[in-house]
Image (cartoon, rainbow, N blue to C red; front, side, top):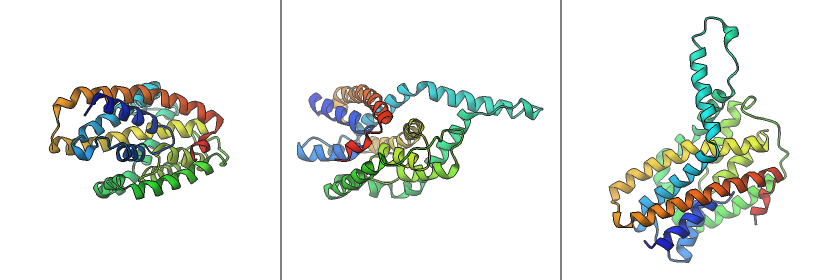
Amino acid sequence: MSILNAIFLGFVQGVAEFLPISSSGHLAVLQNVFNLQTAEEGHMFFDVLLHFGTLISIMIVYWKDIVYIVSDTVGLVRSSHDTFPEQRTERPGARMLLMLFFGTLPLFIILPFHDSLEQLYYKTGFIGAAFLLNGCLLYVSDRIVPGRGNERSMRIRDALLIGCAQAVPGISRSGSTITAGIATGQSRPFAMKYSLLMSIPAVLGANLLSLIKALKAGVEWSNFPAYLIGMIVSIVVGYFSIILLQRLRKKGKFGNFAY
């Protein structure tokens, strides 16, 4: 794989992973149109690194939130040993972790079909249909009146519904989950934060499965410098894509991506 090839795919991954368009779908289309090298041609390990790069982008942007969730959960565990109930305080960070857990549960339903669903990304007919569906979803999203929901008021039912939106193959994960979040009465800022934080266990789990397959298939280590450059590009571009997404969220302009 050439370095230019790796940079190009890293850029596309960083942009498409967070903007409300399908990153896997656009990568597949570009690979077909420009005859770029793909994971099927022995570069599965590179695909893992690209997704890992965008995962790092999320952790950089939401690092304070992640630390808060962990520390609040630890505080909750410690306070559970308090003798007097009045000493226990509300823990929104710990509650957020619980909601992220329930939002991730629907992915376990499609886990047995992971290999079959993964093959759909190499069928341009399926990708085209998914793009049309995703466009309709984004068009509707701007017309949904957001609520005021956050980690303090979110219900388990809401988390499960958003998780089901995440499990639909071929559709933008960020677009579907943010739209589902707004539809369940969450505020726009919280719907976006929840969507991106929920992607951490989802992407990490999928990466681990793909990494096992990639190692079994074999890694062409001579291409590793190009792989590494592509991953770095996906981190940098992913970071700025999240910042752009945050600005678009404030204006409620997701529908512009429908076209």
